Image 1 (spheres, one colour):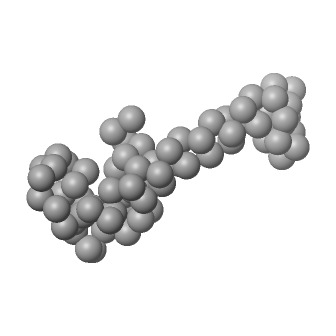
Image 2 (cartoon, helix red, strand yellow):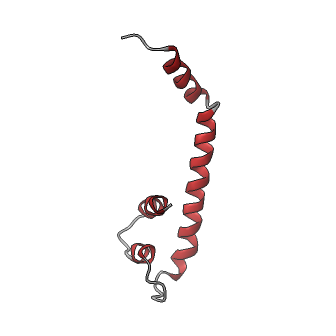
Length: 77
């Protein structure tokens, strides 16, 4: 039931935000910023029906939160 050295190093790198954990957090931040940019550019034109793609349908639904839209965009990527 002992914790391996590898697990300790992984937990430590996550806590200290170093190595691969730092790269992962930076990459996730970039993806979320990209998704937010897409939402911000598409929201002003949400009532226009010229684009009938799936994302436009999700954006037109006022029940969908920004977080939900962000998750949808990330799943498309």
